[in-house]
Image (cartoon, rainbow, N blue to C red):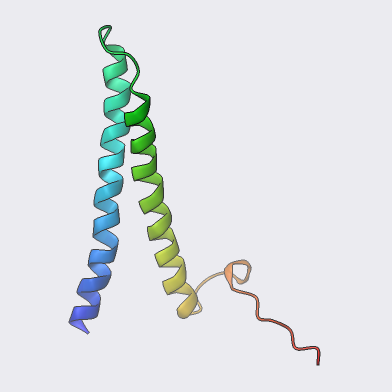
Length: 86
């Protein structure tokens, strides 16, 4: 049981660390653009957005999957069961 909780914690912490790095990249792109000798860093901005959005979506999907297993989500977020008409 303890090992499962440690693995779940790692599944949440590693993407959160990547998302924090993405925020740092976005911030650096904007603050370096203030400097007159450096043009806007589009590559750093796009990499930062990707490093932020992808882990946040992963964490949201992980939480949604976990809550669906325990039936603690609203009906609109439940997976519809196929109807058996036959």
